[in-house]
Length: 84
Image 1 (cartoon, rainbow, N blue to C red):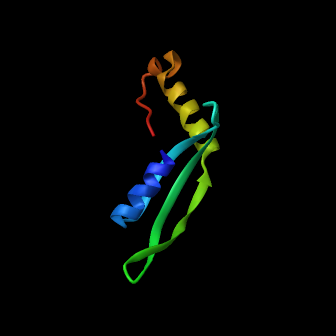
Image 2: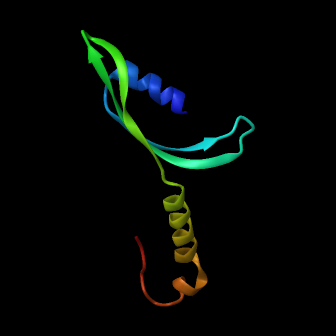
Image 3: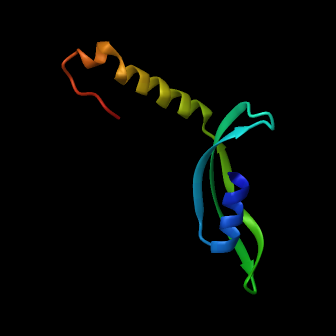
């Protein structure tokens, strides 16, 4: 997925932002990352990428835990509407 996003970035030359699960070659989940980037051009040619990768694994775990809580019978039966 990341390789395709980088190819798309070169082709479109439009800034990108995406989230992806990084995996090993055997398919084991490693970490969630958020990527934000853009190409740098000189004379119409892409010469480098500028951007960041952030580890968002803990945020994704917290979101999953919150989703689980919001779907629990306890919350569903408490009489309040909760969301984030």
